[in-house]
Length: 75
Image (cartoon, rainbow, N blue to C red; front, side, top):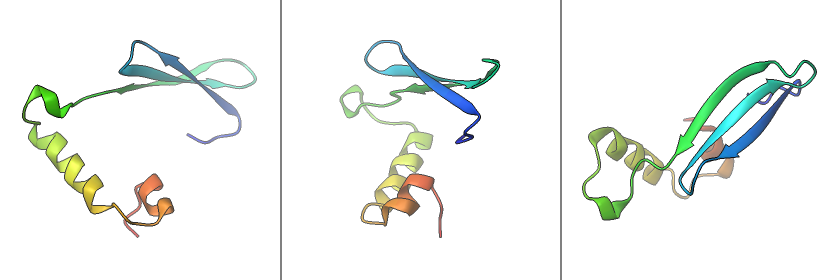
């Protein structure tokens, strides 16, 4: 995803949703589109089991070095 031959454009759709569109820098050929959106807010009630697992994993990484937290490595 961090290929210097690619360019990523963020396209925002409202307050809680965005897309990251990856292009080839030279030919402008579309490579991929990733969606980024808000999936849970405590005010809406209880979270799904999958979201709970993600939150617990993130909570366990509080206080870890930035490199391990940013990359998702378990090293």
